[in-house]
Image (cartoon, rainbow, N blue to C red; front, side, top):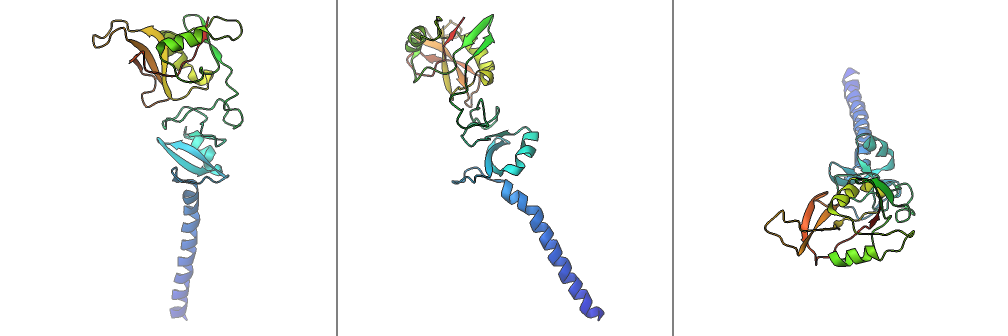
Length: 217
């Protein structure tokens, strides 16, 4: 009898361990998937985790947020906070209908109150075109202009509050200032927004087109 029971108990033990291991592993298999997957389930969301986009089950979102991960809550390609994946930030990441409509501009402190337009001017502009586009802007009866290098840096610091920036090198009105002998007056200052060179201010040829955001005092 003992010879019969011992093998039977061992078999039951192996089955129970197998079930426990499968149950424990299942959340990992469901919650962590390669972000390059071509399909997205309605009960999953993209998360920026350690600099990589992963697609997780919605039940795991709160745990990732607790660790500081950014989440694309509404599946529109915009994330709810700054992230290491270089993904743009949505000013209302709970409603995919508001991505382009919820940016109302903002008044920031840049050596005094500075009002920043709610959106970029449509299209890309070279340096002179950007200056002309802002000067021609007709909104609320104010005199608009292309921000200076210093003002653009203040705008960058407040970009999450202002909203609706796109990845690119934004133009400023500040021309080459003689700081580097490798440049001349055909260059002007720009600043990286939402790129791998995030926040860097660099001299760029005035003829090179880029996005612009107008301001007024």
